[in-house]
Amino acid sequence: MSQYLTAEEFQAMTGQEISEKFLIQASDQIDILTFQRIRKIGFGNLTNLQKELIRNVCASQAIFLQDFGDMLNSPLSSYSIAGVSMSWNSQNLVTLSGVTMQTENHQKLLQTNLCNPALR
Image (cartoon, rainbow, N blue to C red; front, side, top):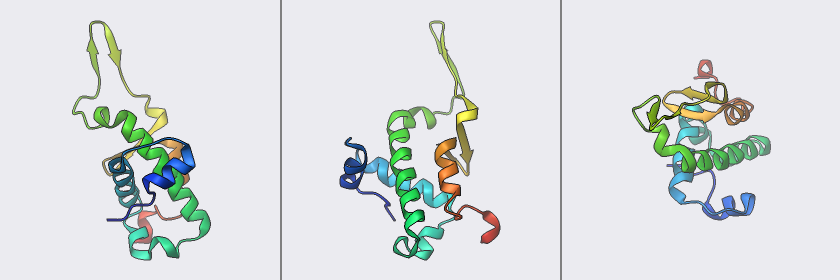
């Protein structure tokens, strides 16, 4: 299992604290979307730009998972309680291979050139 950002690095980047489990989960999701290429190549063998993009996406995805992970894992697509309803803005989210990510983060991950399924 690869982890692209430690809790200490996350705190240095964001000034916030986060549970290691969200960083691990975010790293695992990045591996899914990059077809395990980072693990195959080795994180240390990536370009500095690729490393920076992956770390930024990892941090943002970890925050996203911390804030919305319980809702993302729910089998419900929408719900209403006492007249208050909730639904996701699908324009701001991308779901691929079971991973839901903010569109902005997915765009950053695409810039690494590690997400193209044709390159298998």
